[in-house]
Image (cartoon, rainbow over all chains, first blue to last red; front, side, top):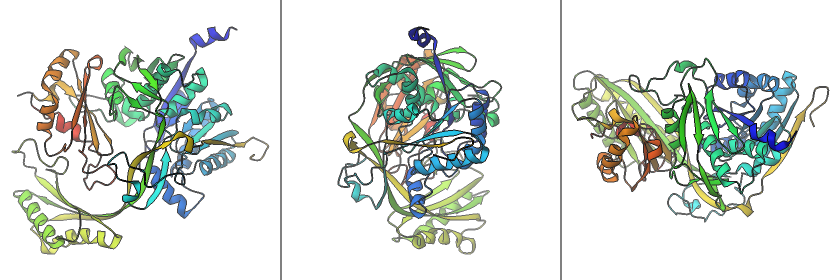
Amino acid sequence: MNPNEKRAVKTVRLGGGAGFAGDRLDAPVDLAERGKLDYLILECLAERTIALAQLRRRSDPATGYDARLHERVESLLPALVRNRVKLVSNFGAANPLAAADAVVDIARRLKLPIKVAAVTGDDVLDALDLSAPTMETGAPLSSFGPVVSANAYLGAEAMLPALASGADVILTGRVADPSLFVAPLMHEFGWTLDDVDRLARGTAVGHLLECGGQLCGGYFADPGRKEVPDMANLGFPFADVDADGNATLGKVADTGGCITRATATEQLLYEVTDPHGYLTPDVVADFSSVTLTESGRDRIDVRGARGRVRPSQFKVSVGYLAGYVGEGEIGYAGTNAIARAQLAAQIVRERLNGRFSELRIDLVGSTSLHGRAFDDDERPYEVRLRVAARAKSREEAAIVGDEVEALYTNGPAGGGGTRKYVTEQIGIVSTLIDRSLVSPQVAVREWKAHAEAV
Amino acid sequence: MPKLYDLAHCRAGDKGNTSILSLIAYRPDDYALLAGRVTVDAVAQHLRGIVQGAIRRYELPQLSALQFVCEHSLNGGVTTSLALDAHGKSLSFALLEMEI
């Protein structure tokens, strides 16, 4: 067969099976089972996730990968193996090698032959110059707090050897989210880094799929205005992508949710700080020329992204210890509820005066989200006082909740339902690093039936 | 007085201390009205007290959408903000409260 002929009709189906580490577990199983996928991609690393994972790894070197890896892989693996779907995920987090071992262990237990490739090299803590300026404020990294993690956003290029190894599961740490989707497309279609328009179209697809249900009516619904059917059974999305990066979005039949021009437009623009120049390690993508066309029920054709050559440096996400936050809450209801909550706020403020560098007081139900109501006449039946302050120690942070709780017997009438919390804060800032200082590597772990792990 | 809510939908995203607000017309015919009325100045005025920095507006007519990139809008940044909604996820519905 003429390989060019074959390529002309070939499409690759990528599924978006997770939008964050805590995402639903059953929807990706349905994708793997009924989605006729070539690849299932799970995006599980928010900004802070990897720093928190790094802290876990410090206390136990065998950990540091996604805490829900076992649940996810156990539920997915039978369908993935049966249907020959490859799994790609950044849920290796701070320890892709340990994650690969964990996946092999699960496969062995389930008696499913498996080959797992782990991509490492994103951890650049040792190579990082702490006097480097942050992208946020220009102040040096060292000025924020003790640094606990530094991970470069690797691109699709770093994942290609893992795909070429023939692995069934490709695990990474920090990789730019769309690159998780671009890498299989580069591998399948032989795209190079010079194919900037194709890379940009693949990036658009990745960006549309990387938040899972958010393309399918999740985070979209507004009753009476933007109706989404059967959200309790929201289907997760897939895209059929051709060799030029043109794509059609869809979801598994008989699942909840919907894919429309409106849901796709919200997701295409989500978190894009420059629609003319969306930066990834693979390409600078221009989404301003993208068209989204409904070509059937729950089907959208995506066309027209354009690309420019990739940035010369990697972005690095740096996690640092940012102290503790203490919080306390108490609720008030009925006539004059806001006035009593305001009196409570005044009492706590006076009690805590000068003890904390940063103190925030919110009236939940009134002003906590936007600092004010846009309609001054709105009077809620109930309101909840919330006090938060930043502290250097856990003990100091605990004072905030204690003071709010003490309003029970010392504050305004009718306060109820106090809660108090202390949370350790991990801050994230960004910087840039030269590509030459980053050396991605791939390690393969394997288990075959009737053989031991290699 | 109609609100943006009646004509458009919005999703808020975040990057560090920057809030990113899309504004997407339900009907493509309304895009011109949005582009004419929902200026950078109008958004800055409407979201005063929330957006503390510069606002950039991108026009995306083929998507019937505007994109507002609002700097210094998340109380210092998502990861260290004391705010309940540190990501500013709910700011989408603050923008849609704007009268037009």
